[in-house]
Length: 122
Image (cartoon, rainbow, N blue to C red):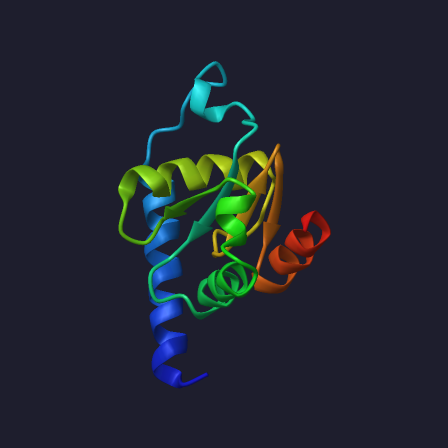
């Protein structure tokens, strides 16, 4: 990975972290902070690890559609960033990096763990 790509990833993660700190926290009674039965793929535009998962979806016959996976881009969408922050908090993740697959209160972070989990569901 080139230095430019590493710098871009660091800057994006920093921005996401700052954004997460400044968003108001929802109360525990808020519907969005409750576990959901939806399977959600959180990704970021330009993220190479996210692209690996997307490639896996495509190589396996649009697996994301077959498994009814909702995709939410978090680098450019503030509402998705907020929701992403809630879900990583729910999963007790220490990092706010993408990609993350959220499924029934469980989170899989990183391309390899996500792809491994998806293979189990095929």
